[in-house]
Image (cartoon, rainbow, N blue to C red; front, side, top):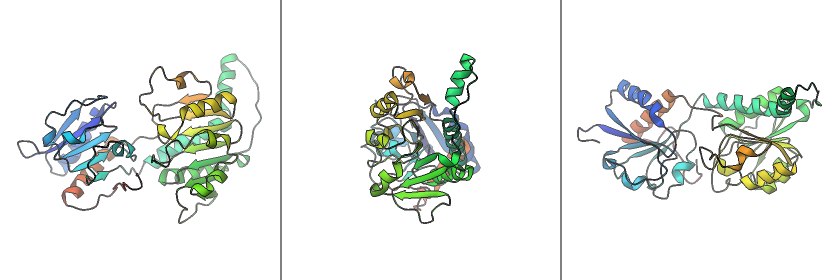
Length: 327
Protein backbone atom coordinates (compact mmCIF):
# COMPACT_ATOMS: atom_id res chain seq x y z
CA UNK A 1 0.00 0.00 0.00
CA UNK A 2 1.04 3.59 -0.49
CA UNK A 3 1.45 6.18 2.24
CA UNK A 4 -2.30 6.81 2.20
CA UNK A 5 -3.12 3.13 2.76
CA UNK A 6 -4.32 2.62 -0.83
CA UNK A 7 -3.76 -0.64 -2.73
CA UNK A 8 -1.00 -0.31 -5.33
CA UNK A 9 -1.29 -2.25 -8.61
CA UNK A 10 1.74 -2.40 -10.90
CA UNK A 11 1.41 -3.10 -14.64
CA UNK A 12 4.63 -4.55 -16.06
CA UNK A 13 5.81 -5.75 -19.46
CA UNK A 14 9.08 -5.78 -21.35
CA UNK A 15 7.51 -4.83 -24.67
CA UNK A 16 3.75 -4.22 -24.35
CA UNK A 17 2.34 -0.76 -23.69
CA UNK A 18 -0.27 -1.56 -21.03
CA UNK A 19 -1.72 1.97 -20.92
CA UNK A 20 -4.94 0.69 -22.49
CA UNK A 21 -5.73 -1.19 -19.27
CA UNK A 22 -5.58 1.79 -16.92
CA UNK A 23 -9.13 3.06 -17.45
CA UNK A 24 -10.82 -0.41 -17.27
CA UNK A 25 -8.88 -1.29 -14.10
CA UNK A 26 -9.75 2.00 -12.46
CA UNK A 27 -13.40 1.53 -13.36
CA UNK A 28 -13.51 -2.05 -12.01
CA UNK A 29 -11.95 -1.09 -8.67
CA UNK A 30 -14.17 2.00 -8.39
CA UNK A 31 -17.31 -0.07 -8.89
CA UNK A 32 -16.14 -2.41 -6.13
CA UNK A 33 -15.62 0.55 -3.82
CA UNK A 34 -11.91 -0.22 -3.49
CA UNK A 35 -9.35 2.54 -3.76
CA UNK A 36 -6.41 1.70 -5.98
CA UNK A 37 -3.31 3.43 -7.27
CA UNK A 38 -2.26 2.22 -10.71
CA UNK A 39 1.41 2.37 -11.60
CA UNK A 40 2.72 1.66 -15.07
CA UNK A 41 6.22 0.29 -15.56
CA UNK A 42 7.27 1.55 -19.00
CA UNK A 43 8.21 -1.22 -21.45
CA UNK A 44 11.84 -2.09 -20.86
CA UNK A 45 13.97 -5.10 -21.80
CA UNK A 46 15.98 -4.87 -18.60
CA UNK A 47 15.33 -3.80 -15.05
CA UNK A 48 17.47 -1.46 -13.00
CA UNK A 49 14.84 -0.99 -10.31
CA UNK A 50 11.21 -0.19 -9.59
CA UNK A 51 10.66 3.15 -7.86
CA UNK A 52 8.31 2.59 -4.94
CA UNK A 53 8.34 -1.15 -5.48
CA UNK A 54 8.07 -1.78 -1.73
CA UNK A 55 4.52 -0.38 -1.89
CA UNK A 56 3.24 -2.69 -4.65
CA UNK A 57 0.50 -5.10 -3.54
CA UNK A 58 -0.27 -6.87 -6.83
CA UNK A 59 1.29 -7.01 -10.27
CA UNK A 60 -0.47 -7.48 -13.61
CA UNK A 61 2.12 -8.79 -16.03
CA UNK A 62 2.82 -9.82 -19.58
CA UNK A 63 6.41 -10.93 -20.11
CA UNK A 64 7.63 -8.69 -17.29
CA UNK A 65 11.33 -7.83 -17.04
CA UNK A 66 13.30 -10.69 -15.52
CA UNK A 67 14.29 -10.05 -11.93
CA UNK A 68 11.19 -8.00 -11.14
CA UNK A 69 10.09 -9.76 -7.99
CA UNK A 70 12.88 -8.88 -5.52
CA UNK A 71 11.90 -5.25 -6.13
CA UNK A 72 8.35 -5.97 -4.92
CA UNK A 73 8.84 -7.31 -1.37
CA UNK A 74 5.17 -6.78 -0.34
CA UNK A 75 3.52 -8.21 -3.46
CA UNK A 76 0.67 -10.62 -2.67
CA UNK A 77 -0.57 -11.60 -6.15
CA UNK A 78 0.94 -12.03 -9.62
CA UNK A 79 -1.71 -11.87 -12.33
CA UNK A 80 -1.06 -12.83 -15.96
CA UNK A 81 -2.56 -10.65 -18.65
CA UNK A 82 -3.73 -13.76 -20.52
CA UNK A 83 -4.26 -17.50 -20.11
CA UNK A 84 -0.56 -18.30 -20.50
CA UNK A 85 1.72 -18.09 -17.47
CA UNK A 86 5.02 -19.36 -18.88
CA UNK A 87 6.32 -15.79 -18.86
CA UNK A 88 5.82 -15.66 -15.08
CA UNK A 89 7.25 -19.10 -14.36
CA UNK A 90 10.33 -18.37 -16.48
CA UNK A 91 11.58 -15.83 -13.92
CA UNK A 92 13.69 -17.61 -11.28
CA UNK A 93 13.13 -14.72 -8.86
CA UNK A 94 9.38 -15.38 -8.69
CA UNK A 95 8.59 -16.25 -5.04
CA UNK A 96 7.62 -19.93 -4.79
CA UNK A 97 4.58 -19.26 -2.59
CA UNK A 98 3.23 -16.19 -4.41
CA UNK A 99 -0.36 -16.79 -5.63
CA UNK A 100 -0.53 -16.77 -9.44
CA UNK A 101 -3.63 -15.98 -11.45
CA UNK A 102 -4.38 -16.24 -15.14
CA UNK A 103 -7.21 -15.00 -17.32
CA UNK A 104 -10.07 -17.32 -18.14
CA UNK A 105 -11.85 -15.46 -20.93
CA UNK A 106 -15.35 -16.70 -21.82
CA UNK A 107 -14.98 -15.10 -25.26
CA UNK A 108 -11.44 -16.27 -26.06
CA UNK A 109 -12.55 -19.60 -27.52
CA UNK A 110 -14.68 -17.97 -30.20
CA UNK A 111 -11.87 -15.61 -31.20
CA UNK A 112 -9.32 -18.40 -31.41
CA UNK A 113 -11.73 -20.66 -33.29
CA UNK A 114 -12.39 -17.99 -35.90
CA UNK A 115 -8.65 -17.54 -36.46
CA UNK A 116 -7.79 -21.24 -36.56
CA UNK A 117 -10.73 -22.37 -38.72
CA UNK A 118 -10.20 -19.51 -41.16
CA UNK A 119 -6.48 -20.26 -41.36
CA UNK A 120 -7.00 -23.99 -41.87
CA UNK A 121 -9.58 -23.37 -44.60
CA UNK A 122 -7.39 -20.78 -46.35
CA UNK A 123 -4.45 -23.21 -46.43
CA UNK A 124 -6.61 -26.13 -47.51
CA UNK A 125 -8.14 -24.13 -50.38
CA UNK A 126 -4.75 -22.66 -51.40
CA UNK A 127 -5.76 -19.05 -50.98
CA UNK A 128 -2.13 -17.87 -50.89
CA UNK A 129 -1.54 -19.39 -54.33
CA UNK A 130 -4.67 -17.76 -55.68
CA UNK A 131 -3.50 -14.42 -54.29
CA UNK A 132 -0.22 -14.77 -56.19
CA UNK A 133 -2.11 -15.71 -59.35
CA UNK A 134 -4.35 -12.68 -58.96
CA UNK A 135 -1.29 -10.44 -58.76
CA UNK A 136 -0.17 -11.96 -62.07
CA UNK A 137 -3.59 -11.78 -63.70
CA UNK A 138 -3.80 -15.58 -63.95
CA UNK A 139 -7.08 -17.51 -64.02
CA UNK A 140 -5.97 -21.02 -63.13
CA UNK A 141 -8.00 -23.57 -61.19
CA UNK A 142 -6.21 -25.74 -58.67
CA UNK A 143 -7.38 -29.21 -57.61
CA UNK A 144 -10.00 -29.15 -54.87
CA UNK A 145 -9.56 -31.69 -52.07
CA UNK A 146 -12.78 -32.27 -50.11
CA UNK A 147 -12.65 -31.37 -46.43
CA UNK A 148 -13.48 -34.99 -45.66
CA UNK A 149 -10.12 -35.97 -47.16
CA UNK A 150 -8.10 -33.30 -45.34
CA UNK A 151 -6.81 -34.21 -41.87
CA UNK A 152 -6.25 -31.54 -39.23
CA UNK A 153 -4.43 -32.27 -35.98
CA UNK A 154 -4.81 -30.07 -32.92
CA UNK A 155 -2.04 -30.38 -30.34
CA UNK A 156 -3.51 -29.10 -27.09
CA UNK A 157 -7.11 -30.04 -26.38
CA UNK A 158 -7.97 -27.59 -23.64
CA UNK A 159 -10.93 -25.25 -23.91
CA UNK A 160 -9.57 -23.51 -27.01
CA UNK A 161 -8.40 -26.64 -28.81
CA UNK A 162 -11.65 -28.50 -28.14
CA UNK A 163 -13.71 -25.64 -29.54
CA UNK A 164 -11.58 -25.49 -32.70
CA UNK A 165 -11.90 -29.26 -33.11
CA UNK A 166 -15.68 -29.13 -32.78
CA UNK A 167 -16.08 -26.49 -35.48
CA UNK A 168 -13.59 -28.08 -37.88
CA UNK A 169 -15.35 -31.44 -37.50
CA UNK A 170 -18.72 -29.80 -38.10
CA UNK A 171 -17.43 -28.43 -41.42
CA UNK A 172 -16.37 -31.93 -42.41
CA UNK A 173 -12.64 -32.02 -41.77
CA UNK A 174 -11.02 -35.15 -40.41
CA UNK A 175 -9.91 -34.00 -36.96
CA UNK A 176 -7.41 -35.46 -34.51
CA UNK A 177 -6.67 -34.12 -31.05
CA UNK A 178 -3.61 -34.72 -28.87
CA UNK A 179 -3.20 -33.86 -25.21
CA UNK A 180 -1.21 -34.86 -22.16
CA UNK A 181 -4.00 -37.07 -20.84
CA UNK A 182 -7.05 -38.67 -22.44
CA UNK A 183 -10.25 -36.58 -22.26
CA UNK A 184 -12.97 -37.59 -19.82
CA UNK A 185 -15.58 -37.05 -22.53
CA UNK A 186 -14.26 -37.48 -26.11
CA UNK A 187 -15.57 -35.03 -28.68
CA UNK A 188 -17.84 -36.30 -31.42
CA UNK A 189 -16.11 -36.26 -34.81
CA UNK A 190 -12.61 -36.09 -33.31
CA UNK A 191 -10.09 -38.90 -32.90
CA UNK A 192 -8.26 -38.53 -29.59
CA UNK A 193 -4.62 -39.32 -28.83
CA UNK A 194 -2.92 -38.85 -25.48
CA UNK A 195 0.58 -38.89 -24.03
CA UNK A 196 3.98 -39.50 -25.53
CA UNK A 197 3.06 -43.07 -26.51
CA UNK A 198 0.45 -41.81 -28.98
CA UNK A 199 2.16 -38.66 -30.25
CA UNK A 200 3.56 -40.28 -33.40
CA UNK A 201 0.20 -41.81 -34.30
CA UNK A 202 -1.37 -38.38 -33.90
CA UNK A 203 1.14 -36.68 -36.19
CA UNK A 204 1.34 -39.30 -38.91
CA UNK A 205 0.14 -37.94 -42.25
CA UNK A 206 -1.50 -34.74 -40.99
CA UNK A 207 -2.33 -32.22 -43.70
CA UNK A 208 -2.44 -29.42 -41.14
CA UNK A 209 -1.00 -29.22 -37.62
CA UNK A 210 -2.36 -26.64 -35.17
CA UNK A 211 -0.24 -26.05 -32.05
CA UNK A 212 -2.38 -24.86 -29.14
CA UNK A 213 -0.32 -26.37 -26.34
CA UNK A 214 0.54 -24.64 -23.08
CA UNK A 215 4.25 -23.92 -22.87
CA UNK A 216 5.95 -26.25 -20.40
CA UNK A 217 9.32 -27.97 -20.20
CA UNK A 218 7.69 -30.96 -21.89
CA UNK A 219 6.10 -29.04 -24.79
CA UNK A 220 8.97 -26.65 -25.60
CA UNK A 221 10.30 -27.50 -29.07
CA UNK A 222 7.26 -29.65 -29.91
CA UNK A 223 7.38 -28.55 -33.56
CA UNK A 224 10.78 -29.97 -34.41
CA UNK A 225 12.38 -31.98 -37.20
CA UNK A 226 10.97 -35.30 -35.99
CA UNK A 227 7.47 -33.86 -35.67
CA UNK A 228 7.57 -32.20 -39.10
CA UNK A 229 8.91 -35.30 -40.84
CA UNK A 230 5.80 -37.23 -39.85
CA UNK A 231 3.32 -34.82 -41.43
CA UNK A 232 2.01 -35.22 -44.97
CA UNK A 233 4.37 -33.67 -47.50
CA UNK A 234 3.45 -30.04 -48.11
CA UNK A 235 1.59 -29.80 -44.78
CA UNK A 236 0.38 -26.56 -43.21
CA UNK A 237 1.81 -25.74 -39.75
CA UNK A 238 -0.14 -23.26 -37.63
CA UNK A 239 1.36 -22.06 -34.35
CA UNK A 240 -1.04 -20.20 -32.10
CA UNK A 241 0.63 -21.46 -28.92
CA UNK A 242 3.97 -19.95 -27.92
CA UNK A 243 7.01 -19.15 -30.00
CA UNK A 244 9.16 -21.64 -28.08
CA UNK A 245 6.94 -24.48 -29.22
CA UNK A 246 8.69 -24.18 -32.59
CA UNK A 247 12.30 -25.00 -33.36
CA UNK A 248 12.69 -22.24 -35.92
CA UNK A 249 15.64 -23.76 -37.79
CA UNK A 250 13.84 -27.09 -38.17
CA UNK A 251 10.69 -25.45 -39.53
CA UNK A 252 12.70 -23.28 -41.91
CA UNK A 253 14.51 -26.37 -43.24
CA UNK A 254 11.18 -28.18 -43.71
CA UNK A 255 9.82 -25.21 -45.68
CA UNK A 256 12.91 -25.12 -47.89
CA UNK A 257 12.65 -28.86 -48.59
CA UNK A 258 8.93 -28.74 -49.33
CA UNK A 259 8.04 -31.06 -46.44
CA UNK A 260 6.06 -28.11 -45.09
CA UNK A 261 4.24 -26.09 -47.71
CA UNK A 262 2.91 -23.28 -45.54
CA UNK A 263 3.50 -22.02 -42.00
CA UNK A 264 1.20 -19.57 -40.25
CA UNK A 265 2.93 -18.16 -37.18
CA UNK A 266 1.20 -15.97 -34.61
CA UNK A 267 3.69 -16.15 -31.73
CA UNK A 268 7.46 -16.01 -31.54
CA UNK A 269 10.28 -16.63 -29.09
CA UNK A 270 11.06 -12.91 -29.19
CA UNK A 271 8.29 -10.37 -29.58
CA UNK A 272 8.02 -8.06 -31.38
CA UNK A 273 9.68 -10.22 -34.03
CA UNK A 274 13.02 -8.51 -34.80
CA UNK A 275 13.24 -6.88 -38.22
CA UNK A 276 16.31 -8.96 -39.05
CA UNK A 277 14.66 -12.31 -38.28
CA UNK A 278 14.63 -14.77 -41.19
CA UNK A 279 10.88 -15.40 -40.88
CA UNK A 280 10.18 -12.06 -42.51
CA UNK A 281 11.98 -13.22 -45.65
CA UNK A 282 11.15 -16.95 -45.72
CA UNK A 283 8.87 -18.07 -48.54
CA UNK A 284 5.76 -19.87 -47.43
CA UNK A 285 5.46 -18.11 -44.06
CA UNK A 286 2.47 -16.05 -42.96
CA UNK A 287 3.05 -13.82 -39.92
CA UNK A 288 0.48 -12.26 -37.61
CA UNK A 289 1.57 -10.25 -34.53
CA UNK A 290 0.17 -12.44 -31.73
CA UNK A 291 -3.44 -11.52 -32.46
CA UNK A 292 -5.09 -14.93 -32.91
CA UNK A 293 -7.37 -13.98 -30.03
CA UNK A 294 -7.44 -11.11 -27.58
CA UNK A 295 -9.14 -10.66 -24.23
CA UNK A 296 -11.25 -7.54 -23.79
CA UNK A 297 -9.70 -5.05 -21.34
CA UNK A 298 -12.86 -5.12 -19.20
CA UNK A 299 -12.52 -8.90 -18.74
CA UNK A 300 -8.88 -8.54 -17.68
CA UNK A 301 -9.82 -5.81 -15.21
CA UNK A 302 -12.72 -7.72 -13.65
CA UNK A 303 -10.76 -10.95 -13.24
CA UNK A 304 -7.74 -9.12 -11.82
CA UNK A 305 -10.01 -7.45 -9.26
CA UNK A 306 -11.73 -10.73 -8.36
CA UNK A 307 -8.42 -12.55 -7.94
CA UNK A 308 -7.15 -9.74 -5.74
CA UNK A 309 -10.25 -9.95 -3.55
CA UNK A 310 -9.86 -13.73 -3.29
CA UNK A 311 -6.16 -13.46 -2.43
CA UNK A 312 -6.95 -10.88 0.26
CA UNK A 313 -9.57 -13.20 1.74
CA UNK A 314 -7.24 -16.20 1.65
CA UNK A 315 -9.50 -18.05 -0.80
CA UNK A 316 -8.40 -20.06 -3.86
CA UNK A 317 -8.28 -18.06 -7.08
CA UNK A 318 -10.96 -18.74 -9.71
CA UNK A 319 -8.25 -19.25 -12.33
CA UNK A 320 -5.29 -20.34 -10.24
CA UNK A 321 -2.07 -21.69 -11.73
CA UNK A 322 -0.81 -25.19 -11.06
CA UNK A 323 2.92 -24.64 -10.98
CA UNK A 324 3.65 -28.34 -11.24
CA UNK A 325 1.76 -28.54 -14.55
CA UNK A 326 2.98 -25.14 -15.77
CA UNK A 327 -0.50 -23.71 -16.43
